[in-house]
Length: 204
Image 1 (tube, rainbow, N blue to C red):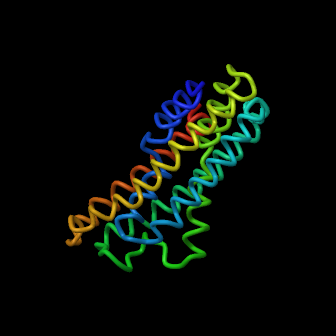
Image 2 (image 1 turned 90 degrees about the vertical axis):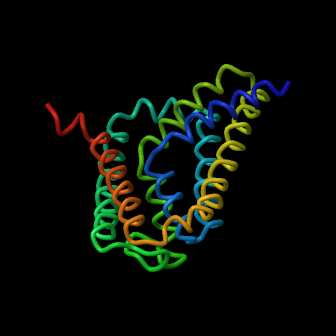
């Protein structure tokens, strides 16, 4: 009876744990101690909505809208380039545990940045709405939503462990050099994902 739940949890974990813009953002803000509950909570709520939407059948519609996916890709790429530039600035200056340029500084900025890094990335729709939504279709109604519940559980566990656990890494970031390394890695991650989102349009 619980087979769909555990399968959803396993597949969901595999998709969510992959290194990406969202995880990089949650980790970097967690190390800084910036809104360690609010940021993963927003990520989890977004995943709940998207996973349930995919389970309900939206995944098929999203997969058929090539123009929608392209617009989302370019919107996400623009945001990732801008955020990567902020991280590059912080890497050049040499950040510190509080107050560096790449950290969110208010509840409003934390909410907006988390929503942007989550919802402007087409990969999140492919993973949650399309892939998980399609895979849930192998089960009948009850099993389908057990599958979704397993994926939702993995999302909850991962984002809160990532955010709260990151704080234990804070002592490693007492020097500007450590922050330069972290912010440079954030910048490269954001820019590489931005390129991957638009590669088909910019390379003939």
